[in-house]
Length: 167
Image (cartoon, rainbow, N blue to C red; front, top):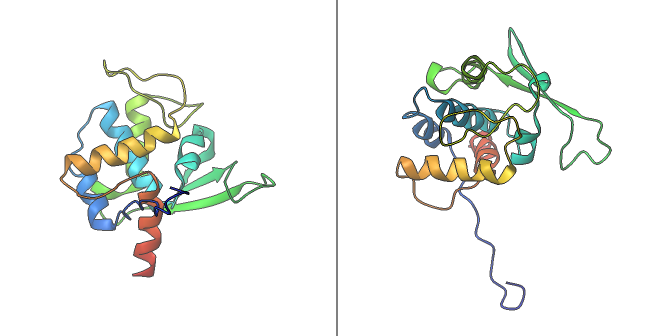
Protein backbone atom coordinates (compact mmCIF):
# COMPACT_ATOMS: atom_id res chain seq x y z
CA UNK A 1 0.00 0.00 0.00
CA UNK A 2 2.79 2.39 0.83
CA UNK A 3 4.65 1.64 -2.39
CA UNK A 4 1.73 1.99 -4.76
CA UNK A 5 -0.35 4.52 -2.84
CA UNK A 6 -3.42 2.32 -2.46
CA UNK A 7 -6.13 3.97 -0.36
CA UNK A 8 -7.36 1.92 2.57
CA UNK A 9 -10.80 0.38 2.18
CA UNK A 10 -13.28 2.16 4.38
CA UNK A 11 -15.91 0.25 6.27
CA UNK A 12 -19.50 1.31 5.77
CA UNK A 13 -21.22 3.29 8.46
CA UNK A 14 -24.08 1.26 9.92
CA UNK A 15 -27.12 3.53 9.89
CA UNK A 16 -30.14 3.04 12.14
CA UNK A 17 -32.15 1.17 9.50
CA UNK A 18 -29.23 -1.19 8.86
CA UNK A 19 -28.70 -1.82 12.57
CA UNK A 20 -32.41 -2.67 12.87
CA UNK A 21 -32.09 -5.09 9.93
CA UNK A 22 -29.03 -6.77 11.48
CA UNK A 23 -30.73 -7.49 14.79
CA UNK A 24 -34.25 -8.22 13.51
CA UNK A 25 -33.75 -11.94 12.72
CA UNK A 26 -31.86 -12.70 15.94
CA UNK A 27 -33.56 -15.18 18.23
CA UNK A 28 -33.07 -16.44 21.75
CA UNK A 29 -29.82 -18.40 21.64
CA UNK A 30 -26.84 -17.18 23.69
CA UNK A 31 -24.93 -16.16 20.57
CA UNK A 32 -27.90 -14.20 19.27
CA UNK A 33 -28.46 -12.46 22.62
CA UNK A 34 -24.78 -11.55 22.74
CA UNK A 35 -24.64 -10.31 19.16
CA UNK A 36 -27.80 -8.20 19.61
CA UNK A 37 -26.45 -6.59 22.80
CA UNK A 38 -23.01 -6.09 21.24
CA UNK A 39 -24.36 -4.40 18.10
CA UNK A 40 -26.94 -2.23 19.84
CA UNK A 41 -24.66 -1.17 22.70
CA UNK A 42 -21.77 -0.48 20.33
CA UNK A 43 -23.98 1.67 18.11
CA UNK A 44 -25.91 3.54 20.82
CA UNK A 45 -22.74 4.22 22.83
CA UNK A 46 -20.60 5.05 19.76
CA UNK A 47 -18.04 2.62 21.16
CA UNK A 48 -14.86 1.35 19.63
CA UNK A 49 -14.56 -2.41 19.50
CA UNK A 50 -11.77 -2.33 22.12
CA UNK A 51 -14.06 -0.36 24.43
CA UNK A 52 -16.87 -2.88 23.94
CA UNK A 53 -14.74 -5.92 24.71
CA UNK A 54 -13.01 -4.10 27.56
CA UNK A 55 -16.26 -3.71 29.48
CA UNK A 56 -16.79 -5.71 32.63
CA UNK A 57 -20.20 -6.40 34.16
CA UNK A 58 -19.30 -4.00 37.00
CA UNK A 59 -18.72 -1.22 34.43
CA UNK A 60 -22.35 -1.24 33.30
CA UNK A 61 -24.93 0.25 35.64
CA UNK A 62 -28.62 0.53 34.82
CA UNK A 63 -30.69 3.42 36.17
CA UNK A 64 -34.02 5.05 35.26
CA UNK A 65 -32.44 6.80 32.25
CA UNK A 66 -30.71 3.79 30.72
CA UNK A 67 -27.17 2.50 31.13
CA UNK A 68 -24.03 4.19 32.43
CA UNK A 69 -20.88 2.65 31.02
CA UNK A 70 -17.54 3.25 32.71
CA UNK A 71 -14.80 3.00 30.11
CA UNK A 72 -11.58 2.36 32.00
CA UNK A 73 -9.40 2.35 28.90
CA UNK A 74 -9.92 4.24 25.67
CA UNK A 75 -7.74 5.08 22.70
CA UNK A 76 -8.13 8.81 23.34
CA UNK A 77 -7.70 8.55 27.13
CA UNK A 78 -3.92 8.28 27.39
CA UNK A 79 -3.87 9.12 31.11
CA UNK A 80 -6.41 6.36 31.80
CA UNK A 81 -8.66 8.70 33.73
CA UNK A 82 -11.70 6.79 32.51
CA UNK A 83 -14.84 8.03 30.86
CA UNK A 84 -18.54 7.74 31.55
CA UNK A 85 -20.85 7.04 28.59
CA UNK A 86 -24.62 7.22 28.84
CA UNK A 87 -26.79 4.89 26.75
CA UNK A 88 -30.49 5.79 26.84
CA UNK A 89 -33.46 3.49 26.39
CA UNK A 90 -34.40 2.94 22.76
CA UNK A 91 -37.69 4.10 21.28
CA UNK A 92 -38.44 0.63 19.90
CA UNK A 93 -38.23 -2.50 22.03
CA UNK A 94 -36.52 -4.70 19.36
CA UNK A 95 -33.65 -2.20 18.97
CA UNK A 96 -33.35 -0.96 22.55
CA UNK A 97 -29.75 -1.36 23.78
CA UNK A 98 -30.80 -1.34 27.44
CA UNK A 99 -33.34 -4.12 27.01
CA UNK A 100 -30.92 -6.17 24.90
CA UNK A 101 -28.24 -5.77 27.60
CA UNK A 102 -30.73 -6.92 30.23
CA UNK A 103 -31.73 -9.93 28.08
CA UNK A 104 -28.05 -10.88 27.64
CA UNK A 105 -27.50 -10.82 31.41
CA UNK A 106 -30.67 -12.82 32.05
CA UNK A 107 -29.71 -15.45 29.48
CA UNK A 108 -26.16 -15.87 30.79
CA UNK A 109 -26.56 -15.36 34.55
CA UNK A 110 -23.15 -13.65 34.67
CA UNK A 111 -22.59 -11.16 37.47
CA UNK A 112 -18.88 -10.34 37.24
CA UNK A 113 -15.96 -10.37 34.88
CA UNK A 114 -15.98 -9.71 31.13
CA UNK A 115 -19.29 -8.41 29.84
CA UNK A 116 -18.98 -9.97 26.39
CA UNK A 117 -17.69 -13.52 26.13
CA UNK A 118 -17.35 -16.17 23.47
CA UNK A 119 -19.98 -18.86 23.09
CA UNK A 120 -18.69 -22.21 21.88
CA UNK A 121 -20.26 -24.27 19.10
CA UNK A 122 -22.30 -26.20 21.67
CA UNK A 123 -23.93 -23.02 22.95
CA UNK A 124 -21.92 -22.86 26.17
CA UNK A 125 -20.67 -19.53 27.49
CA UNK A 126 -16.90 -19.35 28.01
CA UNK A 127 -15.17 -17.39 30.77
CA UNK A 128 -12.65 -15.43 28.73
CA UNK A 129 -13.12 -12.03 27.09
CA UNK A 130 -14.31 -11.62 23.51
CA UNK A 131 -11.63 -10.14 21.25
CA UNK A 132 -11.86 -6.94 19.25
CA UNK A 133 -11.51 -9.00 16.09
CA UNK A 134 -14.58 -10.98 17.15
CA UNK A 135 -16.64 -7.77 17.25
CA UNK A 136 -15.68 -7.09 13.64
CA UNK A 137 -16.63 -10.65 12.67
CA UNK A 138 -20.01 -10.34 14.42
CA UNK A 139 -20.85 -7.13 12.55
CA UNK A 140 -19.70 -8.59 9.21
CA UNK A 141 -21.62 -11.84 9.71
CA UNK A 142 -24.85 -10.15 10.80
CA UNK A 143 -24.68 -7.68 7.89
CA UNK A 144 -24.12 -10.52 5.41
CA UNK A 145 -26.91 -12.60 6.95
CA UNK A 146 -29.47 -9.92 6.06
CA UNK A 147 -27.99 -9.17 2.63
CA UNK A 148 -26.26 -5.85 3.32
CA UNK A 149 -23.58 -5.17 0.73
CA UNK A 150 -20.24 -3.48 1.27
CA UNK A 151 -17.34 -3.59 3.70
CA UNK A 152 -18.46 -3.97 7.33
CA UNK A 153 -16.31 -3.87 10.44
CA UNK A 154 -16.47 -3.19 14.15
CA UNK A 155 -15.94 0.49 13.35
CA UNK A 156 -19.19 0.51 11.35
CA UNK A 157 -21.08 0.87 14.65
CA UNK A 158 -19.18 3.95 15.83
CA UNK A 159 -19.09 5.64 12.43
CA UNK A 160 -22.78 4.87 11.96
CA UNK A 161 -23.63 6.66 15.18
CA UNK A 162 -21.65 9.71 14.02
CA UNK A 163 -23.25 9.58 10.58
CA UNK A 164 -26.75 9.45 12.08
CA UNK A 165 -25.91 12.37 14.33
CA UNK A 166 -24.66 14.40 11.39
CA UNK A 167 -27.71 13.51 9.28
